[in-house]
Image (cartoon, rainbow, N blue to C red; front, side, top):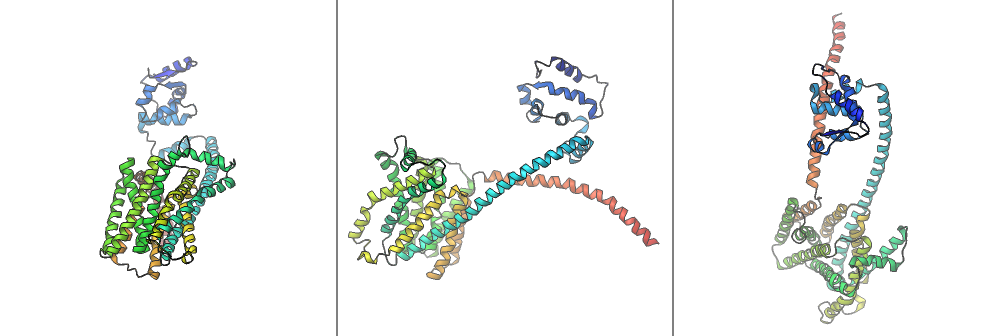
Length: 493
């Protein structure tokens, strides 16, 4: 019922059936006694119902596969039936069975193993070279992200000593986002095999906004809200630099990762992870301790509130982008950031003009404007955004995020020598807690599964090493006794 024969092998099937029904008075003691019956199993097919019942043993797959040898079938049958205390998991049994085989198949297996080992070694070499290159580029990207982010923060602090206009600086730096798509197209021309014209590439990237492309309706419904969030994020960050030191600003902005997780969990229904909840708690505790470090003065409280607002706007930007637009390719992301620059020029330009005439952000003449600082800040911020958005093409995203954390100690060293910052115990603990929470948020979603697999492998290796160690000890005892006997006889003489 459960096992049926091949259509063309009825005689063999009958022979197999007769061979399997041996009289009980015949009691085979060796594997060779039942090997003819086991050879006949190659002409049998197992029904699907039996497969479901015997799925745990995985022997059904071996019975139905055409490339399975006789030895594997015999071992499967003996393992299932427990024939004469057969224990395939014992290493000594496997070594004994392999030693009983003829030397010719062993030599063939050794040659095949050498050839397979050569292929594996070549594949491992290629994989290792690729990973080394990716790690090398990752280190370069980390250094670039760290230097550009900390450099732009310090340069903004220096610029405000001569040019106290954070919103104007935000507007000026955002206009440089227009260079994203031209820079991407240059990379496309130099690297892509199938080169397209700028117009063709633009039309292809416009599909990201919908079937009709970048229409006026799409511009106001999908691009304009993100332009507002981009401007608010940068303005609040720069305005906070005026109130508090750059170390506190950079470490508090790292809380945006925790805000992204909380918003994704609430809005996007992302997977709940306990370790990320702990990281969010660390971020909130770090904010409170950072506020307490300066004694809850109004100046520092306003600065901390501005940074937290900037981190919140950044998190809202990322979550809404994923909710409304989904994931974007490199060309689509470059076009989107260039569109934000167009929105900034068309609709945000009026705000710096209003602030200038109302003397909220006023400068007497354009000659005193530090254009070098403004351009330097814009270039550094543009570099930071390029590495942040396109760095995943050459390295791991986790390494890119590490560059933001590494900017905190860089800013701390600069503040220690250029300002009157006091690194008391509360501030140091707050920095460490926020940094630890940021690192916890970098853990992948399946990190717990990886840890369990690693621990399981370590336990299996320890169990495999223990029998081998016991065998070495027992085999070494007779040799030791043999060596001691000549020494005793020579001593007696």
